[in-house]
Length: 506
Image (tube, rainbow, N blue to C red; front, side, top):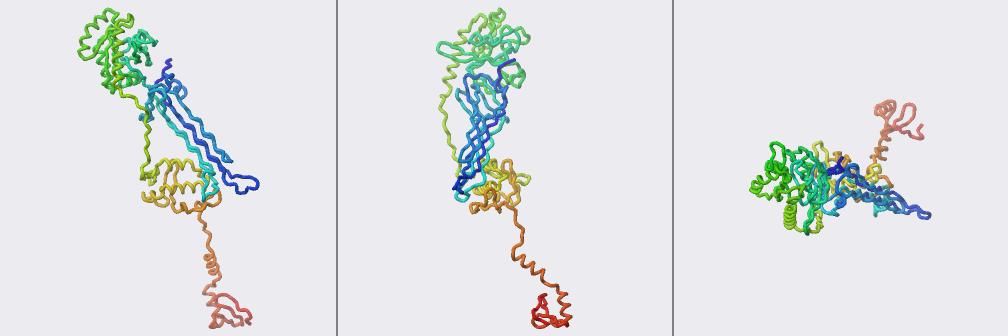
């Protein structure tokens, strides 16, 4: 079983921020101590750092799920929660970080290079931090912001100066074993090498690295024979060396045909046309191999390629090859641009940038996109009316309601911010003119009272006391109606047309 892993999928989860605390200071003889809820701690982040002592992604292959520490919640007496510890993952030099859609997030080359791949969530503020001149004792606190949760793909591309390419069993492993101190597996069957091998070669005052790339076959650029897994390890190589088996007995194969087949795969893979190339005619210790190497050498040099006849067994021709490789590597290093320190780029927010955008969807909803509105929604406790009212005030001050009205939203329209959906009611929010009510409540969110007013109750009472017209007409028929609106009956009683009675009447 191989212990070399050059591609893994990591499931990352940064730490969540701690919740803020709702607390009122209570002490004897201090009835109005004020709010003293502390803030929550920030969640830990996940970072990748290049470590020269790490050469494989094997650890992540067995432990692909990574989670940073959460921040602690705040407490009373203005005690803030502790921040979660950041998680630092050590990766080999040459690791490329991809998103799940294939886009490159970072290319980590050079010892100490660091990349924050998942950011921890912010801690929520306690009610002590939320207090102001109008809201002196808030009855709510902010929730902790969730940390980033994402999947990334780590790919290792070997960082070597020279890459050995060729067909299986061409002698690449044997060649690197005699050029350097590397001890790869060597056997007399194809695909003996399943993982890249790196070796360090020292020539006089020059030092360079050589990568033994596993054997390539026709169709490797399209994935045949794990070709894509092998080809990415030569992307960073400055010099490519064709290792050709000049003593092969397979029918239809000869050094020129092997070079053409490998070049076709490199061309299809792309991005390697500008790399200088050498040809190594290996296995000249075999009589037939030496004869064939002498025959094809003029044809190879006619193509503009330098060739070297070597034997990994007898070490014949290795000295000339190593000096030629060292010269090409030095030329490549001299032509490379000088490394400059990382520049800190500051990109201020544009003057007319509101920090959010509004998008109308086909289903009639209005989606608000923006870092601040989405973070505010995540940190709001929707079980607390005062917290919801505070969120509405913040959105109104940011200009979200004004932009919703310009976008065509009407009262009752569906508004979506992050994972939350609302029925937009702009009349509920009074902005800066609102005076807070009792802690934990917001009168603007209370249901409207349908109780009748005093004037309505008085009119209803008068309507109930008003006598029907037919009853008044019947009384008028039984007696004489006087000029002051009274009725004198035949039995001597006196009453008013509106139903009242007259005291003292006989």
